Image (tube, rainbow, N blue to C red; front, side, top):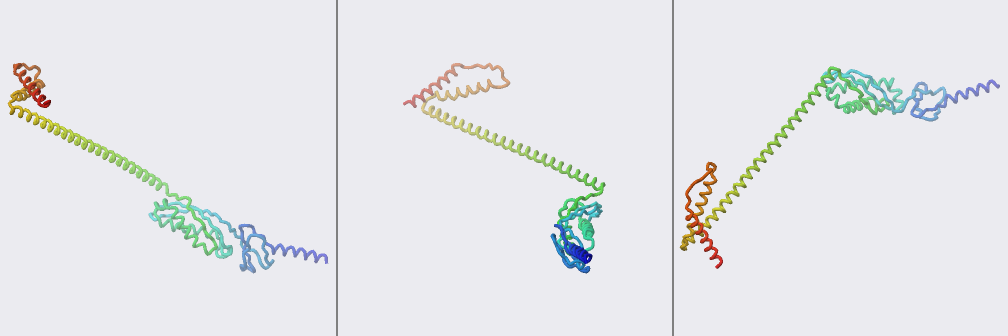
Length: 304
């Protein structure tokens, strides 16, 4: 009797242990009954029927990272490059991830590598090196759509390194140097062109200002001659009026004026250093006297 009780207690403990399952946070267990999927155990304490149900696959439900190994890819313009990457994915349905595909991580890796060759093989090398975001987006869409039936959500695919061959890298370096030299020459030429334009505009402005100055000087000179002519005309009119009234001294004024101007021109000549000529002092004095009398007469009339 005692032996039966001990066996019963041990059997009860074994049954309880077999029927109680504890699932850790971030994990989910599938439950199979006679080899067929029945349900999924979530984190916490769970009960199953001992010896009838058993735990199947233990799936990690947290986001996972998987490295994509390096592989060689031939681009659209027949350039050979070495590419590697990284995939971020998360299991969203433990049952599908367990029973829809065998070896989930290997399937995701092979699918990613195949699509890397497909996407990058349809692009030129220049696009490959400059449009990495476009490549990542295209890969993410294709791989995520393909893994959806597996209960997996691919959150991100990143291309880490794109390594062209050494000779191609050297050619690209020479091309880049040539482009920089070309841009430098263009900038120098543009600077010279701008300098020539500014210099030409300055010369043009100087010519315009010089012409305007000459125009203004000519205008002022003409205006001066006009005023001088008007003054002479008024003087001539006054003298003529005086002669008409019988004042002969006015005629002496003109004679003396022309006489003095002639002497001034002779004295200022560059090729004449010494001038000896007879002068009639009485005539000059008489002319000057006539000028004096004419002035007195004019001022006397004004005062009256």
